[in-house]
Every structure is written in structure tokens, then in C-alpha cells.
Image (tube, rainbow, N blue to C red):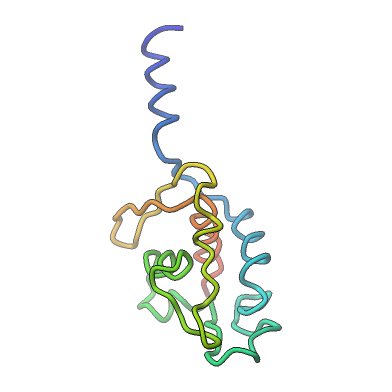
Length: 133
């Protein structure tokens, strides 16, 4: 193979992936989030009544943030950097389960700033952004 082709292949393998998979994010949401936030992400999951803090309606994140999806805030809550007290303890923090699941991928904030996150978190965030009302 020509050296240019090898260099391109190596660069592509080393660079973080940019595309998120919203279908995979939907599956992750169903597995990890729907019990509290509800099947339709409106804060009405089957476990919601057991919590001391009402789960957030995740379809309204952009509306509550001036029309801009709060990418960094959502990532930080999922991975545990900004914990939420829900039932006497932190909201379940899934970052540790998602670490090491392949290379980190880049997500952009509303200002265009790239943020690296594990692939599962990036997929979940992309799904949440897709369901905004």
C-alpha cells in the first residue's frame, strides 16, 4: 500500500469518531434511564414516585435552556461530575459503566466547542437531543 494511504488509515483510526448513533442511544436510554424518567422521557417512570426529587422531563432540556441543548451539563450529569440527589443519594451515575467502551467521540456544544465523551454517553446524549420538544 502507498505510504499516503497508510498515513490516512492511521490518522482515521487515531482520531475520535464524530458521528453519534441515536438508535443505540435510545436502547441505552431504555436500559438505564426509562425506569425513572419514563418511556417517553417526561419524568414519569415507574420508579419516579419513590424518589425525593421528581425526575426531570428530558424532552424539555432545550426549552429550559433558552432553546439550546445543554450538551456539557447533560454529559456531566450522566458521567457523575455533576451529581443529582434523587433518593437520599446521587442519581445513578453510569459514567463508570460506559468508560472504556471504545474510543471517545466528539460532541459539540451549542457554541461549537468539542467535548470528548465515551461512545455510549455520546449516543445517549445524541438521543436526548433528538427528542427535544
